[in-house]
Length: 93
Image 1 (cartoon, one colour):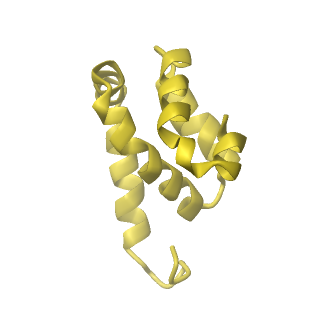
Image 2: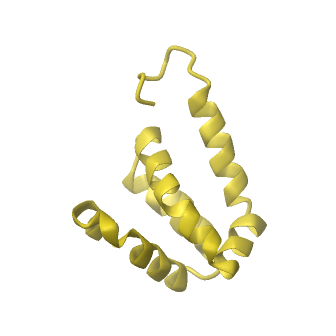
Image 3: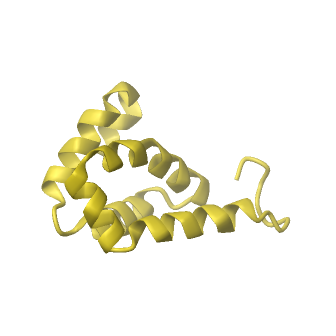
């Protein structure tokens, strides 16, 4: 499904909604572990999370699961770490 997004970014809402349906109870695995392995660069991962987050929080069930599993906190922590540019990150990151 993520490969579809690389070619058709305009389908992001449909792709994320479908991913939510198939990942019930395993959202942390899908949206943290699996996607992070496909986007190893912190910049790429943060970008894809940014593309997904507004769609995920429109869905009440996904919203609750993300909060319960602590995924939102992990994403915030990742963003804060990336924003603390200590000279190790490129300007884009």
